Length: 511
Image (cartoon, rainbow, N blue to C red; front, side):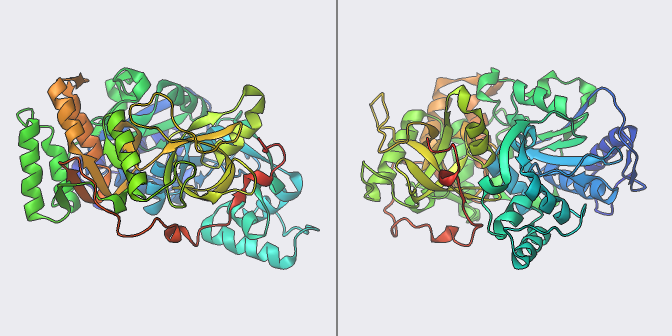
């Protein structure tokens, strides 16, 4: 079998060989480590599916290593060099910033789908720096930049591999070197997409247009996208295009969180049975907590996962009340969720600029304080490569039993935000936190209603997704109670991140 030195399970080895076969047909030989120029042809799609712990991410990471060893270049969407006919490229993608950051923490250079579909347009003067950094040109002489600044840019690029981060290290802002954004016109080559269960039909078609060789990695046991009527993109693929990893790997075998997730596949396990399993696991292992209340200290960085919107709103208001947050303003350190952009079509450039900096629907954000202009906010975009931005913001605080949200302050147009101390399980897909609190009374309500999705009780799908968001510890909260905070909200844990990309000072962004 054409597998690397790492010891794979039989199903992983089979999946690796199937992907290697597809790539070999496309001119990339993983076994002998070389690649030929790309040929035109019909898009080929292969899906690798498996539940949590089946080794999908490990397989993806090993494929990335083998592709790079064969001479395939990884593209990030931040900047691409001049096209060459003999160049083979690879993009590792995820639907959200948070999902991409989970891969990056494991050493896989992932970016978001959006950053690949839309590409930045660089000022020609600074494009010379980008080409030099990538090894495609001589060290340039730029009147506005000293030799020391260029050296800082070079050092940053060697450390992070990001052209925008390197230019920021030289003292430039995004508006200095990026003149706009455009939808990709030329196709790329090879695409590996993680968390593919989150893809809707439109995203899938966009990816098929861009990548002639497309591999999807995802968990069919998760929840389908909200607008997909319970279906995932996997459902539209032929059987020959799908591979399933079934084995749970040894390194995951003693993980009580995964044990609970896989116990949900037993059709004889009802909600009460499952809660007993959680209680028993908590007695054996401190990685599972059978909690009598919500821990408010955890909510600032990892939201409580709920099913019902009413529960989400109640918990958010309780979080703000216990921290003494005023109705008229946010406190630094409060978590937010981007709910989209309120911009007319004529402001397409501004929309792309905000989205490219990570402010896409579902992005997790920490409020850092007010911006220099009215209606602007300083924000930390969780999981973004350059996380700190300042942007026109519309913040909505929903209130229990009130149809209209309270808006403490807002720009006329810009990025819209909901509070992020609690989120629905649907919106949590693709994310992962060390500590996750699952609000069990909501899942009990789903179980009582008897609803199903794709032939599975809805409460089990909800529980599976919620449980598998936890990487270290699971809190199964069984009472509608909230603990007191141990201290005030803070942003000290966000220090030391790259310098802000100040949107509020950019031409045309004063909304």
